[in-house]
Image (cartoon, rainbow, N blue to C red):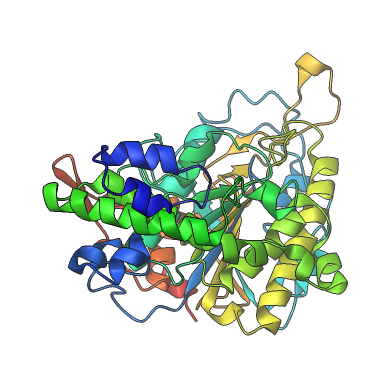
Length: 478
């Protein structure tokens, strides 16, 4: 006797059926089945964004955010400051800097040069990115609200200093929906747990379907990256019977109770999981790439995450975030000591893989409408820091939020541009200043969204990613 014939007449509560029959990551899914039989199915569609969006023609169809956890040093990468050598050892002044516990201003030991036809200036630590000088837009005038990792990461990811708001990726897919029905629309590639953790890709008060899907890329075996991708006991035919049975139970439930949003979100997640059984195994399998392509990215977790990010966006994933973390270090770029040698190692990995990503996207015709973002939660001080408690004689750099650098590439941005300036020491953004709120407004604009009109009513108030702030930096657009 089939599962359906044996059980469909029993009147168990719907939640009980979901618990008893959900014995695998992809065991149950109903949205597609309902879609063919029920007028209410429109609300369960994976691909549907908000009515009226995009607000205008999008330049970027998809986004890859390369987040350098711990904060890279701008004066060692994209913002050369010769005055640091002239005033080496002098103590900075001002209320933010009068407790500096280092040896004063510390010049970068790395040489800088102009590259490409545009003359974008970069450090010698970035030889591969230098070949893409005419593809990238360096913002030297970034600033944010605080110089601490937790609130800094929350600001960069969620537009707020506290863990109470949805992330950038969640807002984007809430507004625009998904371009596929077989993979998540927002994926976070994370070979370790960053400071703050899952709140950095949280949906918060947005519906649960807009939560980012985190994938551990330490082990590239697909079944280890995505837990329970296969049902432990049932084949596709038996799972089909479960779907048919659950459809009957859901119809009965929907007739009696309207607008059960939590269960609707569970149904969406289960349907996606069911579809992923077929699609994820192919999409997440980087071993399908040529040896030459894999070598181009490098074999580190960050390198392979960048390669996986490319595979995902070309298969319709709208937002991919690559967290530069390791199992051993939640914030590798946090170079409080031994800044120079640490940046040599970190930049070698990041430079190779990031440049490979740009090369790969460009060769496939994807860079034009894929926005790539590179940067940390803030920068590092132009003056030194000595970790005296550890007896460390090799100086580092402390957290720095009043001026730092990031870059954008593709997705309608103006390649070969250096935008904004910090002062002569790299202490403060002084020209064409760009706050994180402005960055978020600009990213959404490139995706076809007016950031002031992407709102969600919660607890009696309309919320948005940029709160009451944010201006679109149109000078960055091609």
